Image (tube, rainbow, N blue to C red):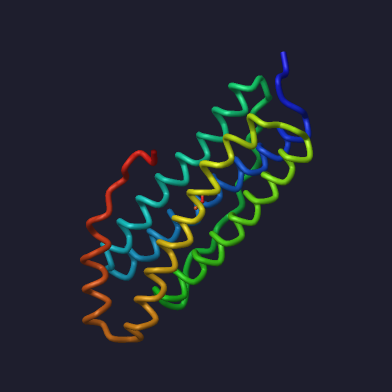
Length: 169
Ligand code: FEO
């Protein structure tokens, strides 16, 4: 029983893989921050890793709910280190902008395929990407202002230590 077109299933499986890559990327950033002794930053990235796993599972569950076949492709190896905390956040912000573009392409596909259920499911991600770009953008902005001031960096680290995974609803 298939309730969903093959073209849409293929694209959703690709996005599932990208969300898993995002999780892997932020786990790698968490390890990078841990290696610098910035445990607040490491915590923030670990929460981000959980968020991305939740995104991946939303795609996986949706594909299965619609009678599509879930496929798990190889996950690309993420970078291991960055030149500075600012550089890591700039990388993350760029990554989120790319994800937003992929979500937008998926929305376009759902319209072209007249797949209203997929269109509707994707609206959650359209909203979520605004939040993703905002949170990466905000911290990137603070790190730009801090420049190399280690006191400010430690203040930001203390702030980021407070982030907790909220389950993502
Ligand atoms: Fe799953 Fe960061 O977008």
